[in-house]
Image (cartoon, rainbow, N blue to C red; front, side, top):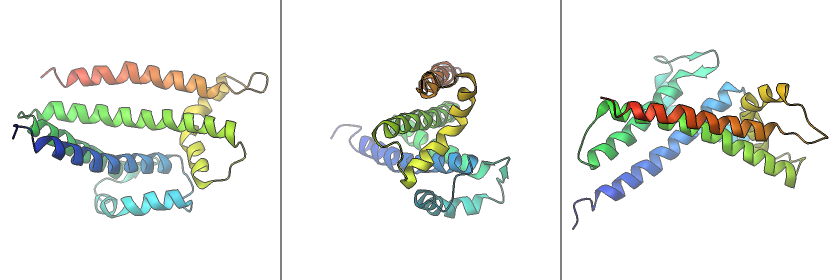
Length: 189
């Protein structure tokens, strides 16, 4: 058997399962920050799935100004776990590099959630503009922190809202300018 025979499936499983839970935690963080309706079935699912570990961390990491610090700490811890598994499977351990990589991955993931949510809301507005599905209301709630400031600067032109396009451009620029320098820090030490 090759040297990495068991390492690759282990990395795949940890990255997939733990990464999915980190994604759900990111959604919870954003939904809580935007004060989304907790009675929404999708919100209720996210809350129910993330509640047990967050309940344990809540006394140590409180919510400050709508930001759930317990969720951030848990996301960072889980992302560190993924990074450490990958690092150990590759035969080297760089704790600083794994920490910086974890922060960059989390920031990139949150930006990606905004990007895909905006894409989804645009497509939904074309296909079924008056949709009342529970997921649609959450998508609009998630995108509000990004699109609302842009709407103040770019009003609809001839009945066409260019806000999503401008927001997507801004998010992609942010990702290009923010993530690479953070990833470069992982290799400084």
